[in-house]
Image 1 (tube, helix red, strand yellow):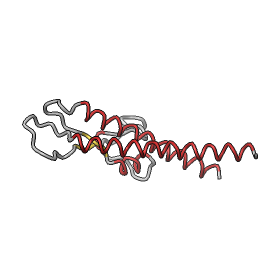
Image 2 (cartoon, rainbow, N blue to C red):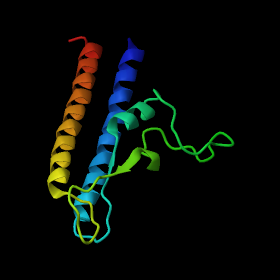
Image 3 (cartoon, rainbow, N blue to C red):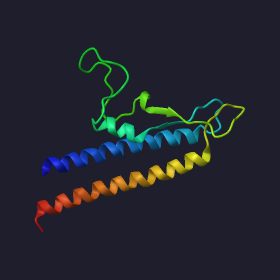
Image 4 (cartoon, one colour):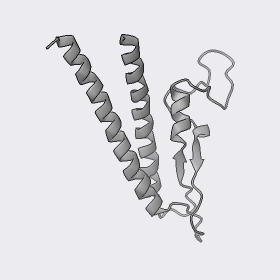
Length: 133
């Protein structure tokens, strides 16, 4: 029982970390909307979560020894980031689409809040079980 709860909380913690990283990426895109040549970035959230939870092995550099160049679990690597396709051509080659970025920011914010509520609910349930009411 405790292992199941720990695994569920670990999964949600990984998701929360990745949601925060995605929010940072989207905020960076919005901040650079007027920067000539800026290429908007985003992440494949589902693939990043599968990698962070150990469902798939990370791709990229091989390591020669334990700890050499291995990415942190839960952190996004450059391989997980992708460039946004420009929705229209710009003379300054900037690929930030403010409508897309605002929608992505709002969607990610709602999912971040839902993950926080899920974690809070699990912890509250566990504390109630420990106290025995």
